Image (tube, rainbow, N blue to C red):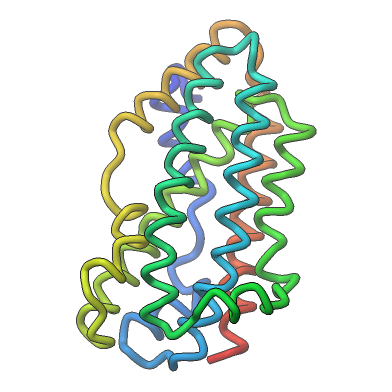
Length: 220
């Protein structure tokens, strides 16, 4: 049994880590075997994800008025999504996706199940439980972004600016890690953290993350 916030985060990340072979699309991108339509779909769907997640994190920050450590965590996340949105525009442009194409895009339900569930958490989960669930999911997402960023340079000839969206999520974020640990620690100390519920939320997020990639794979 985990006794500290750091231990709880580590054990939950390990328990909910996706099977290495579960994501079939990222390895295709890593080999340069995914076509332009896949990259375009990734850019188009992420535009919807980023905007929805930012608003959900801002709502969680507001709900965490009595949990200042959790509020600080979600404030950092919302700021990060704002920065990522700017980087995403450069990736979309490199993929040949302009503003008109983006506005006309009809999002795929399987890709938007993830942000829809983040929004559900923003309305229904306790902020501290959401901290643990979201932090666990970011571990897998960061690894995928590192692989994609490297592949875009090696196989697709993308510039550093076009890869910045993935580089942003792939690089270590010690401030965010410290904030998550502080929020989870405060939740443990005050009894606000329900580890069973947080584990359940984290597992669902991982499933919706997998659905996102499986849906994009249909365009490969």
